[in-house]
Image 1 (cartoon, rainbow, N blue to C red):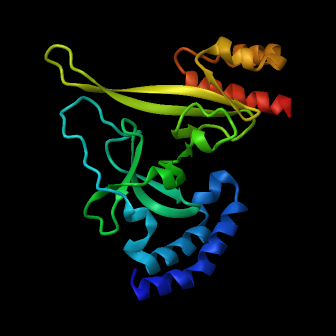
Image 2 (image 1 turned 120 degrees about the vertical axis):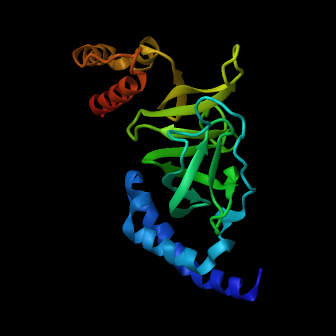
Image 3 (image 1 turned 120 degrees about the horizontal axis):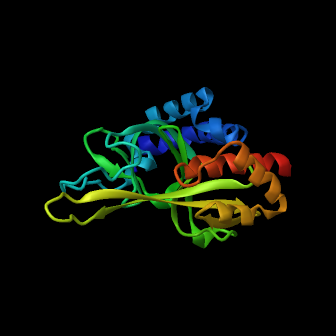
Length: 244
C-alpha cells in the first residue's frame, strides 16, 4: 500500500465511523438510500478509489452458452443497487445477482470489466429495490437452512425469506438449454427458520391464531397455488398485527 493510500485511509476513519453510526440508527428499508449516508460514502470512494475493498474480487465471465432465459435476478441487464460490505455501505452500484452461482457482480473501479464481489464480506445488498441478506450457517445462532443470499420479503415478526436459485437445464430434442428458477420460502419465528411449501404448512406454523388466519385468507381470496409469494407475505403481515 502506498503512503498516499495509507494517508487517505487514515483520514477516512472518522468519516467511516460517522457513516456506520448513522446507518445503525436508520430503519432497514431506508438505510441504503439515506442521502446523508450516500454523500459520506461518495466522499470516501472519491478518496480511496480503486483501493476500496469492494473492488478486490476476481474477474467475472458471463456464461457464453446459448440458452433460453438468463442466469440473473430479474433481468439480463445490470440493475441499480447498493452493497453493505464489511459494515460499509457502497451506494449507486450497477449489479448482477447470478442465481446460478449465487454470486453478486459489479463493474471494477475502471468500469472496463465485471468482478465478483467477495461473498464472505457481503452483509447484505439491495438490487432493484429488493433486499438480500447473506446468511452464514457456521456463524449463526439460528437454524439457517444454508449459506448464501436470501431475499427478505417482510420485516415483521414472523419475517418471510426466500432463497432464489436458477439452474441451467439440459436441452430436450432440438431446443436450447434453458434457465429455470426455483424459490424456497422460509418463515422465521423465534429465530427459527421454517420452510413453507404450502398453505397447510403455513397454518400449522401459525396455529395459535389459525382460525383468524384462515378467515383472513378466505376473506382476501388469497391464492397459494398461483400467487404463493403474495399470499405468504400478506398472511405474515396480518399475523404479526394480531400477534402484537
